[in-house]
Amino acid sequence: MFFRQRSKQSNDTPQNQAKVIAFLNQKGGVGKTTMAFNTASALVKQGHKVLCLDMDPQGNLSQLLGVDVDETDGAQAYNLLINSIRELKALHSPVLFQDALVKGKIDLIPSGQLLSGFELSVAGISSPRQLILKRMLEKTGILSQYDYVVIDGPPTLGLLVVNILCACDGVMVPFRPDEFSRKGLGNFYEVLGQIEDMGVTKIPKVLAHIPNLVDLRRKQEGEDLARITHDLESEFGQGNVVEPFLNKAPLVKSQAQRKSVFEYQSKEFAPLQGQFDELANLISKNNSWNGLSEAR
Image (tube, rainbow, N blue to C red; front, side):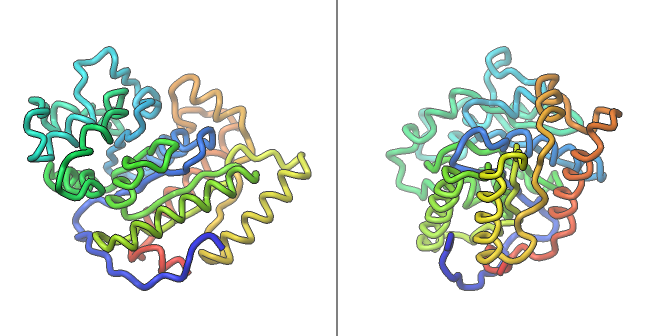
């Protein structure tokens, strides 16, 4: 089993504030950034106002949205996080939310290598380190300006991911159907359990597990997918594992050109567009945001 039985928790996110959705997995190379980018694009296509928050020091989501932090003035997520901590006044910079915001069809708070020093920067503070992102989102008023905040997280289980989990309402978990991903998922849910034990905030709802880059021509891959799907749906409920993403070539093409799949008219993109529309529908039509226990 991936996770232990949970107590029911209430949702404390006001209805007029943005829902925060994170794409997370401890394992790299599972397509988190591509999934976040295209799902955000699908939400915008539905008419929602969306902010992408890049919380990966690699900054891949920022690059997909046309921003190279190394060529800007450096205002990014790290500055907003540090500026929200009163104890770190000596490290504050004159960067406001508006300074870091890159406006477009999808608005963006970019990331960069500065964020890799986040854990060291906050090591000595006395306030709860796991709630820095949550409090930053509240203090800056970001949540009142958008329908959805979509976060791309790093491929780790460190303090950045803990902050993301404490700040978000829902989690989307892309994975590859192999034994390494299975072990990574187990580790991910151990961290969720530890956050629950802290008792400092609500636990996000796991909205979906997304099998990505799947090649069902390989017998072993099909068997691994069936095994992981069975375990996850036993734990989180039927339908929690969505339809596998099989068509790799169009995703690679769109990513290389820094475009969403919705910017192409070719028939080869139609199945992917439909799948990302379904992910957006899963988010926008979800009326139950009361934590992971609701998925049971």
